[in-house]
Length: 322
Length: 285
Image 1 (cartoon, each protein chain N blue to C red):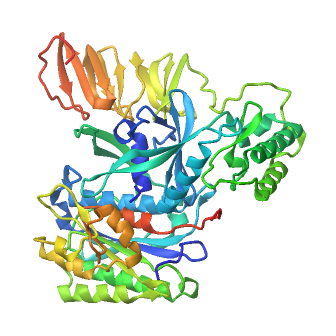
Image 2: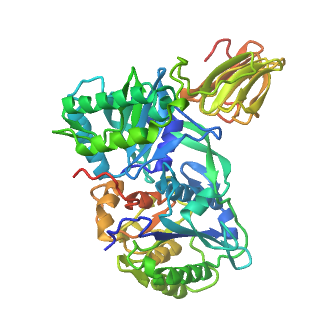
Image 3: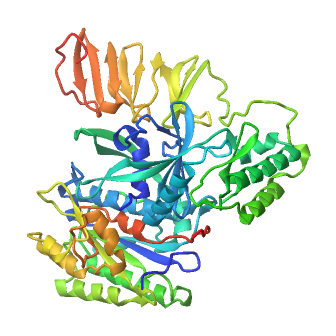
């Protein structure tokens, strides 16, 4: 039985507990802290970053979809062409539990997201460049003898001066598809409008993340929150640069599993996503190891352990990190 | 039977009946944590609503694949709409458009080495824990029956996948006898579209010595469960044979049908995953 979308969402927010090889994955979240999911009839998808690269992680929603996807991707893995984005079928990647407490695994699909989404990149392409790229893609698909069968703007990326299709779940080998050609022509008609709107003469680097201006220093996004340093101290903003936790700390770390280590003039502590102290800022040092849910704090040179809710588990008794 | 895809042309309906009576304040072990029955019910209900909304979501927004009603029962023998007091039943797109609260939930995640780690997640919350007063389950089932009677009679729903009723309770009704409950359950199950009869699924929340729940039990799995569990089992629909394969993949291949639409201390959001929601635009086979 395949997991529910709710279980998939939970796994994305706790990858170290829920995935076999994607334990370091970071899911792209909205400002509410919930993963941004995309749905089709047969798949649920989320964008993740892994070791700095962007991927699309997909879970089939039915056994029929899973079986077809596995067949398709197994066949495609024999192809090696710059027009194909890297895609891997990950058997048994996701782990979840049934009501009876039995562990079950689920197969997932990991697809590289090269370059930028076509719908975003198109604003710096001229009509001619788009037309040439579409013709190149037609030739690529014919050379590969591949029919994608689901070509639309949202299933195309712009990378290294060419169009790269993604979401090959319904692709078939054995001949390019007239339907693909018609779809590409429809994409051209839809996107290649008035060239006055194109800004191809401005060779600005593409950056889909809005600039977080007005800060002395800006960190990276973790769990929908970005650590920033302002005149008042360190705090956290969302992707739209709205303060979620006001700047008031001498120092602050990134969020992992809903907790972040911070430092005030009184000492170090641990906060939750709303900026409330789970461990009060009274300790000399706080160490938080998210993967093991291990929190250690030092006071008077002695260490003690705490749980996720800030409850003390061991007395202050050792002179080293336990 | 039960083979119609759920689409905008062939919508279906879901009714969730939520026990909010005083007995729901009792504590039980649910998913490894001690909490009130009311909290467990709210968790199950919110997961179910989340699943229903997300299954209907597409790139352009939530599609009107079904109508949803969420009714609470409790207090002074009252049955009340939990989503909109004026309209008990609304489309899933209308429900998705309503503002929601985010609820901070502490969850035990099992680690690869078998140990448990706590994680705190924010989850959408449509229904909050509620526990006060009586348990007018009979009246709630009657209202569900009346809503569905009207729904299945609409011509546009005649060939739809039949509606599904989820009744989430600790099973202790105070406004009728066991025979009354069985009778109204029978009336609900006898309502039908051309695709099959309405499915009535009971989710029983009760203290237990075992930490794990179970779902879709067969008769021999009831064992020494309470009288209430046996009553809810009798009131629940027998799951159609087309679901047997999916249910066996949850319970294990050794499980033998027929299965009842019931769960014990466990969500039945898997039922939603078994349904064929949405049309497939890409045909390659």
